[in-house]
Length: 226
Length: 226
DNA sequence: GAGTTCGGTGAACAACTGTTCACGAGGATA
DNA sequence: TATCCTCGTGAACAGTTGTTCACCGAACTC
Image (cartoon, rainbow over all chains, first blue to last red; front, side):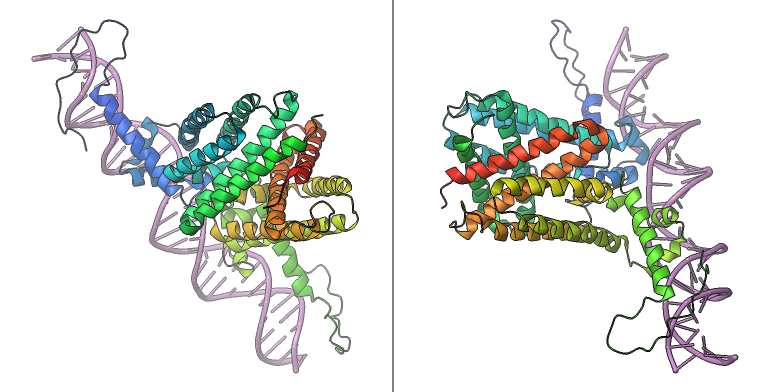
């Protein structure tokens, strides 16, 4: 399982605080860590984290049970890593997408497109997040809630730059952001469902999502802030 | 565990297709069945159905493991019963509440009040539903989805009688109903969280829910149906 | 009152679980 | 070169699991 080759260790002069080149050991360790994460992710397709066995995970990763403890203390920690993986890249993508536009309409289409692509590229992660949003594993549940809050906060900040709502008090902005995020979460769940149950109906779901977002946007024109 | 008394069996003349008086056996059976359901519900407070053991349930119910199979074939069936218990009473309550009012504003306050009370009275059920909405146990996941759809359909039918939207095409009505139901589901989840984490903040959550519903209602005035 | 059905029991089964431990191959370090 | 440290191994532990079975008393039927 190891010893493919051994390139002469990076014996360069270690000067200037630059990042040290990753040692062979570290890269190997990273490999089995990934194997554990991927194995878990595969199992979580139809299991809940609550019910995920350490032995199962190591088996799926092709590794001895004891090896698990070299990387995580308990199964919860592995779950937290998965939460992080799913959200940090998504948040970045969304921020970028919103930076590119000014009109609300473009913003909607852009955001939905980004979401759809990201869900498609990371189905296993999203299935996991959907299932564990109200997880029995407390730390994971809290982590997901926290990430979604962050998401809403960032969205509220960006919304504040739009013409229609830029004079709203914060409370109302937050409410709108909450509504939008709730809708996107819901849509993400519908997306993973439709992607594996009836992929041909995916465009319908996408169109529905855009329409409902547009409804929320229209609401802003009629709403009189508190 | 049995034989408290034995009232002379209801030896009345069995005529006219009236419901037969429940036999002692049946009522006893019902008792342990309830004990199993309640035991499960208690355990599900911090477990997922996926991870609920038959032995655990029988232990919590104060009953031998084998007794479980006299009532359910597998743990999924028990879950389905819980889903049914939670939704049928709620749907009835909501329909009644909406029948009492005509103005949209009353309707919002009424509905939220009913929801809050029902959630408070059935916290365990709601926690279970929230957690299992994307359950790893397929039949349960499907059952919950189905119940929520029913909910939305009934709401759409009632919405059609309101002045602002009564000329909308069905598709738009369904969309609005979906939005509202999604919001209520989300709110129910926030409610159970806040009820056990910070009960004093409950009024805030209630007010927030009403405000967000009102936002959706305002949206209807600005929306131009497809 | 005799016979049947039903719902609960406790024992038994193999299978699997999380966690610990001493061990060793081999990268890292000097 | 010799030493240390890291990460994976396989064996072992006691504990729990789902499910089946023969059994039995009490409720029911006639």
